[in-house]
Length: 207
Image (cartoon, rainbow, N blue to C red):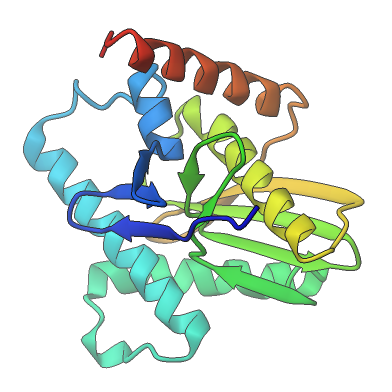
């Protein structure tokens, strides 16, 4: 069976496959209460979202070799500088060897889609990296697990095996970065359970 192409609308933040709307990782987490910022004032939330978007875009352009640093806001540059320090650290660990994938949109046979910030594949080792500019939340562990499922399916479609898999969040601050590893072996199963619950509620119009 030929897989229908995945499309994404940035304006609506919607994924479609073969014209059919499919949920994203963040939509599933939000719907089940693991991505809730309703207590945050709108002006603070808007600022945080804009900062996160700018840092993600800047880091993407840097790794693609197309970033014009003269256009980068000083506040954003502080976070980007910390991302570069992380990359130096990751290079020393050997994580950046082999193939690297930047902001790659993927869909799963489980019926959801997402866009992992980074994943690297070398000698059957998969490393998932998610970039954060805000606070820690419980949903991030399940987010990287959901991305790992997408990445494994993609690599399998390319006839590449995964022997070892590591998941991390990199929290970028003005003057430092913090690397947090997600080790819970139940994260993947927990995300699948959330996805099943999400689909059940959608079926019965409970949202």
